[in-house]
Amino acid sequence: MSSDAIRVEMSGPVGTVTLDRAEKHNAFDDALIADLTDAFERLGDDSAVRVVVLAGEGRSFSAGADLGWMARMADYSDAENLDDARKLAGMMRALNEMPKPTVARVHGAAIGGGVGLVAACDIAIASERAVFCLSEVRLGLIPAVISPYVVEAIGARAARRYFQTAERFDAATAQRLGLVHEVVKDKALDGGVEEIVEMLLRNGPAAMAAAKDLIRRVSAGPVDEAMIGDTAQRIADIRATDEGREGVGAFLEKRDPAWRTTKTGS
Image (cartoon, rainbow, N blue to C red; front, side, top):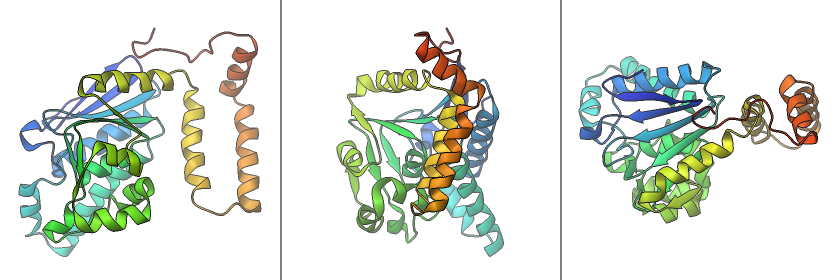
């Protein structure tokens, strides 16, 4: 699928969602938010899709909120403003909870909501020239709907600084904070993303989805009897699945499991 705001392209089992508002530095407006939400939900539901890559066209990954869209919102009623905010929050949640591994390909600037997109992806690979900024307070606003994902990525202590200073920070700092996992040379960005994608395609699709759900569960509560019982039940359940039996059997028989593929599907 494609629209004026995004492109969705398939290469074998890999779906790439590209923000396609280069002239606006891929800034969010209501149309982009709706298109991204639809794309994330469709890719999440498509059993043929194994990995999703999120990228940006042009010089920036995403400059956050479109100023024209924000100007229109100034005339919204309280109910309209809340509905608009909920749509943005829903888009972020759809990305964060997608049952497929997600990889952010970050180049240029990631500002405001663009940082939220990076944080909501499972893995982020950034060009050494990428820059980041949580700029909302400069506009008298706060990074509200992206905060669950950004704070989870960088921690509350770092958020206390960057949410309030609105300072720009480079890719090396983003990696140190935990916002991105790897920083590579500009020319190596596509290769770095490809390497991660190929790693993911070696793994059981259902197991990766279950691993994402497991992370959400164990990060949400104390290690008590309920947690111990839940994790024991999860491993018992997945061992009994077709994928679990195939994976263990393939390992013991020294062969590739049935799901093993490449980006091109071969």
